[in-house]
Image 1: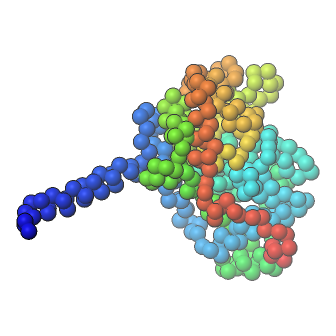
Image 2 (image 1 turned 45 degrees about the vertical axis):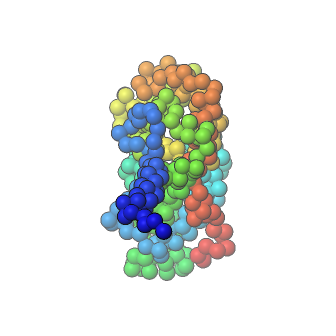
Image 3 (image 1 turned 90 degrees about the vertical axis):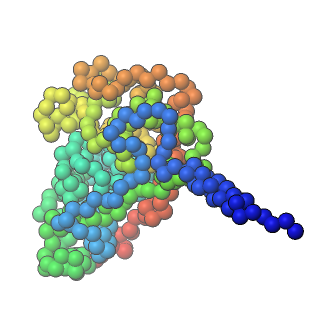
Amino acid sequence: MKKVKPFFIFYFILIPLLVMAEDKSAIKPITEVNVHSLGPERVGNLPIVPVPPDNPQTSLKILLGKQLYFDTRLSEDNTVSCATCHDPALGWSDKGPTSVGIKGQRGGRRAPPVSNSAFNDLQFWDGRAPSLEEQAKGPIINPVEMGNTHEVMVKTVDNIPGYVEQFKKVFGTETVNVDQVAQVIAAFERTVITTDSPFDRFVKGDTKALTDLEKRGLEIFNGKGHCTACHWGGHFSDERFHNLGVVPADVTKPDEGRFVVTKNPNDKGAFKTPTIRDVELRAPYMHNGSEKTLEDVVELYDKGGRTGDPNLDPLIVPLGLTKEEKNALVAFMKRAMTSLNQEVSNVKPIPPSELPQ
């Protein structure tokens, strides 16, 4: 029998190894698109959730915050909870077009999603709250939302033995205060992170996680669709404020948005960029719920906004998308950006009978 030379043995071992290495490198850890990315950070997976040092996460604190999140007793007439306008079943928002508070009062803005709000630099559509803790205090005293006062709300909670016992375990104090209520609600909200979407799986290397149409939509999102001018990074938001030409020119008293906070004339009609994550679950869209579907949103952007507002953001320009490009863009946002994280998507309201008494 003929001896096989060592060189050939080495050759037959080396070639399969090289093929394996080539196959592995073909799966990229980041999305690869053949177009420019407009934002300073490429779209990708969410980073680690930021937690303020003065409000560390604990399991007891999160559970207490979850109970208060679903408790209507925080409102003036015991009918509205945080979950009323930020419903887990509705993408952590509501049916819109704008939100309804106590006594059937309808507000002027749509409920922004609680999901992934831990990544927001500023809270609310106009950015008036600098943290989740401060945001949690706002709806309680808003006359259209919960219509309560902090003093009455705290007294209500302080008169519920089951809550008092839990607050004592979490904070080591005998009485409850508004800052503690805000801290525990914020702690729960920091757990509402929608990850593991088909897009996230694609970014991590699963090339089959997106359909060909969705991959095309991702390219348009990053390029011709101009979406990453504002929706970039893992959170798919630049955390800034833009006038998109949403409000019709004939509205007599338009919502002035960020201007109400800053008093800067350039901020009139500007609103915070929402995340694209789970956007399919949150129709209708925009701060006033004026766009019923994602198709409507794409049409609005394609036209370059609806008004001749002098404060229209310079990033809003006609796009010239074809019908096929619009379909691909919508397809990407609808399924590819919807979370598969069961821990968050399966959260159910806590019935009143199971809340502390």
